[in-house]
Image (cartoon, rainbow, N blue to C red; front, side, top):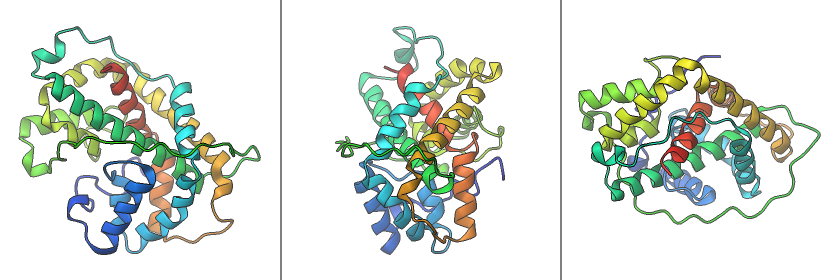
Length: 272
């Protein structure tokens, strides 16, 4: 398996311009998961012939069970998140982050953390061998009410200095500086000062190995949760090989979504 995405999150099908059946499936994903945006796994699958509808048809019942939300909460509760030193009281203001900006940033993080995290555990249920110990107790998925989020900036709307910052922050837990850029960091391009703070705060945790260790732990915990939900998938199912490979990499590589679940929740904790 590769150590980077099998699709480029920057050039994957854009949610804002999706039409027809793809737009309908994106809307169904948002409504079913209770999220305000579509993260890159679904946009990447939309660029692979017939993969998006087939994978979503298999995964939707897992979300409707109500189990992924609890599974994600257990993963985060057990994980050793890589946390930097606390922010000084004036640090955010010094880089131009207002209270309104901070509200927007926290909302963006909450949206990605819910979406990436629930995708990780639910899709793990598709590709992980099942456990005899099944997760069956659940509660209805929470109905989140999201404020309007700042738009996701396209690459050509991000200046070169900010893009350099994004690439360096994106390298944390990834396969290297040239890894495909995760969508969360592009959404944070509205606040270059915040990206600079993130880089300074998290670089020591990357250098010490704390971030790679945490992403590997989150991946293992998600696989365990997925195995206990695997009874919800069909006994036999057929999806195109590109989708099968993409899902296997997504779930089983700590450099993929596990790092974004880890870093997203660490950031949310750091900014509370």
